Length: 124
Image (cartoon, rainbow, N blue to C red; front, side):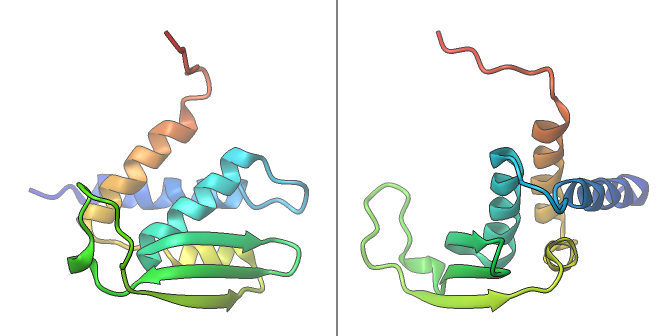
């Protein structure tokens, strides 16, 4: 059973997080990682590089997932290199938001990790 209010709240919160992560000043590494995670999810990319100054995104998009095996080293996964331009990073990232249930679960986990500012990583 689907909860439309929860779905809408997740989408609003992820858009708000994107807006907060795109100021005109220097970005923290945490927000850069958020941008890369969103682009990897949307484009099914193996590698993402963002040039914030030149407003470019370089992606290695996985063309066919059937050759991927998580149990072994993947040396021959077919990829397509793409170089995308954007005018407004916030709008570009918001256009990459998918609304399917799998993506919503991914966004909910991102929101949990970015909203818990008091959570510290402890190494045993």
